[in-house]
Image: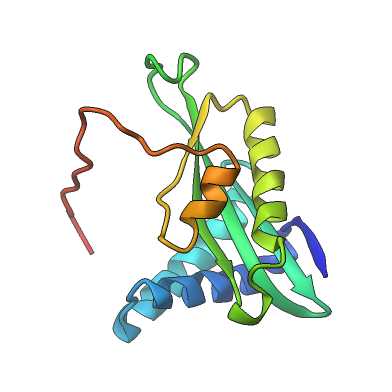
Length: 154
């Protein structure tokens, strides 16, 4: 088993794992082609710049991935330099879960976030992932803000 940073050569494997993850979150079959097309453009364009991905392979098979997006925005109290990270799409095939793969991938990505100067890293935890994220030091964001969203275009 090999856990490492992804390169452009891993684009198709990353796309397939992201789609598998999104299916677990309720991705509708009619929307899959749109996301595949966006990822086929976005990953090669952003990888190593604002997007960093960790992958795990067993032989030639892609079995897990996780993504880190680095963003710069106006500085704030919790992110003085304006640089933040967001972890997305932590996914491991079911046969490989509970073997420390996600922990290794997240370790790579959190070190990269530090290297990139991120003041904080956010993520949305599923019930399955919550214990792992707590073990790594993530804390629930208990504050006076309510997460809200306005969808402008699907």
